[in-house]
Picture 1 (cartoon, rainbow, N blue to C red):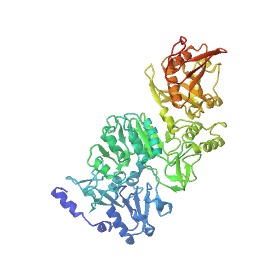
Picture 2: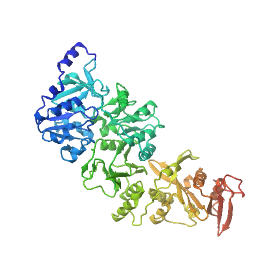
Picture 3: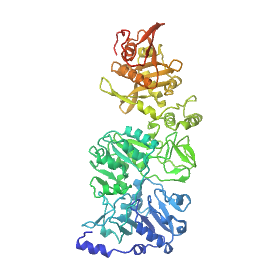
Picture 4: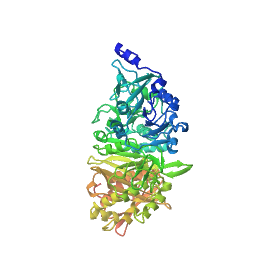
Length: 637
């Protein structure tokens, strides 16, 4: 360590043993312990050793990674542990009533200290050795530590040369510390198991919502890591998050995360703490790409909102059919904490082009039994972390739905159809009984299957607009009705062989309720502003006896003559052929020359046709392309 002479003397004058450092802690005092991977292990051990001399001391913390000796039952009369976020190592103590949990938005914790609402008598923290100017870095945890260190009446700092020196608003002058303890020890590591198939599917769905140039917030876990893996082909992403983990390293090294399009702290990764392996700690050490800030800044929703295209990704334990999100408890059992979820959900919601996302697997294994995490009602005692008014996107392995601005009926339908298929009928029955949905509402069991994701394609229409082709979804009923009412009477007549005046729920539901095997519909969607709308739909229904499928399509009037019809029929043929369907049949009104022209252009095999009561009945095999046997009728494509 290199210090100027005046700092060397000052530094040495404050050096004490761990036992001496905690000797001045008195009974009844409130003691703050440094966060996460920066927990001062030597000071914590010394505090536990001094327990016989203490009584009724409240220990304030947020997410401990250590062994947490202060939560042992033998210390019940000595220490009362109080956490803002429940980790694995203290969950039992909280549930047994030997420790406390304080629910609060992470952005507001520092103000508890600064206003004296939760005064800090003693702060035990871990820092880097001071630089030549006498400044120590708070290292991997700035979060709420900065406020605690600023306001503590007695500040004890554990100096660890292995602590990464992080930059930003992360520095503390050595003169602020009352006592110093040297302890060279590895920084606590947090490792995750590899993502499973469910996490990877959730990651893919979330990645599809992330636009190039977005700024990301995400926590730690298999789902965030899966999202990061799926972003390898994105460009110019940024990070503004309460925490970072190993998952971002590869994206930074490959140039995917570069922050060049950030609207706030351009070119910088903004965070408040790091939690991961030694690889991460080495990567952030003295790295000017990273800026660490206290939570009153990093998690301030108004600051977060200044990032354009802010994407906030947060986890949940369960979500009810109205959109209420429970993230900190399993019924009356407190499991984790509010953390920064609401801070970032609200910040992203107010960001220009922002997307707040709640992600969760569709099921959980509890006491050896699989249960749905999409529920008709939250468990008794469950706490609402993100309200139904704050919720936007909810993602499971079965898809992503946007609930914002949607009715209870629309929310219930959307959530049921991204729930696990085994629980959809049960959830729908509960929704019917509570009059959330129509009394005849049906479940589409096959929606959200992984193989359906492969049917998504994109096509640039002749007007230059990108069109998304995908399988129809149960939630498309209102979009299908909207398309119907935006079509001309002639277009509707040519499709339905009658002047159909209305498309009520009873009929629209039949059109979206396909089994995705014998019956399939593909829709073409575009964005109108921020809304997805359907501009074309094609479908087939297979006859198992003949293995031929009846085919039909309809294109909204203002999207005709732009190549949509040809593309959607060709795509439907490709899908049907891959699924073993032998051929297509179709009934086309004689005057519908456009549709006949499209079928003749797209048919891979010879087209056979006959006139029956004013319409052509056509058929063609889905074999390798051969010459068309008839001259197609004149008409535009």
